[in-house]
Image (cartoon, rainbow, N blue to C red; front, side, top):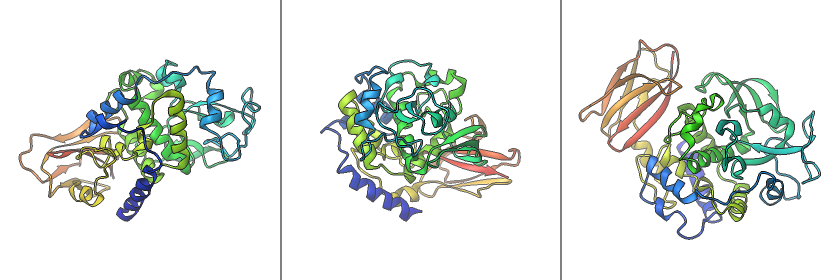
Length: 361
C-alpha cells in the first residue's frame, strides 16, 4: 500500500507541472494546516464571478467538451451533442443531458451563489441524474439500479459507516467528485454549517465549519481522492472554470491539500505544494489494533504523545473517551460495552489529530 501511495504522489508531482495556478495564488495558505488552512483557502477562492443558471448551457461547451466535441458526461457513457440534446423531458438513459448539482441544490436550499457554481455543476444524462436524486455519494452494497458507465444506486455497503441509500459514481470519476466536495465545503465555509438544517444533507454534512463533513464521508472522500488522482480532464476544466468564474479549485491544483486539512498530513503544515514524506507519516501515525475489535482496543504511538482518545459513532457522537493523559504513548480502552457496528477513533497527539475507522464485532 505504501508503494502504491508513493507511486500516486509521483504521478501527482508530474501533474503539478501542468496544473499551476497563477504565481502567488496560494501564498497566503503557506505554513498552515487543518481548520486554519481551510480558512486560508476560503479567503483565496471566495467572491468569484457568479454566472446565471442559464449561462451554464453555454459554459459547458468550454468546461465539459470531449475530444470529439461531444458532451463529457461523468454519469453515463451517452453521446450528447451540445445544445441539440439539452433536456427537456426524458424517459430513458441517453435521452438528453441536463445540469447536475453534484452537491444537491436542496442541501443549501437553492441559494446563490452555490446554485450556479460551475465547480460542482456538470452536464449529465437526465435520467441518471434523476435516479441519483438527492442521495449522498457513497459505495453501494446492495444495488437497486445500475447506469451504463459503472455508476449505481442502492443501499450503502455494510462497512461504510452509513446505512441509507447512496449513489456511487464510476471509479474513474470518484476523485473528481471528492475534490468537488472538498471545494464546496471550503468555498462556502461561511455558510456550510447552516446546510445541516436540511435533513437530506445530514449524512454528508455535520453542521460545523470544520471539518464540515461527517466522519464516514470525510474518510470516503479521502480514499476516493487517493485512488483516483487528478486527471488531465480535471486540470483542463479547472483552468476553463477559472477563465469564467475567476477562482480555482485548490484541490485540483494541489490535491495533497485535502491531506493537510482532513487526512494523513494534518500533523504537518502545508507549504505550496510540498509533499510530506509518506514514510514519515506512516512512522508517526498512531497504531490501533485489533481491528475488528472485540473487548479491548489498543492505541500505540512510539513517536507522539497521546493527549486524548475518543470513540465516536457514525454520526460523530462521542461514545467512549479518555482525556488529560500525561506523556502517554500506549493505552488500552475497554470496548466491551460497545454494540456491534462501525465507529471512528479520534486520537489527539502533540503533533496533531488522527482519525481511524474501526469495526466492533
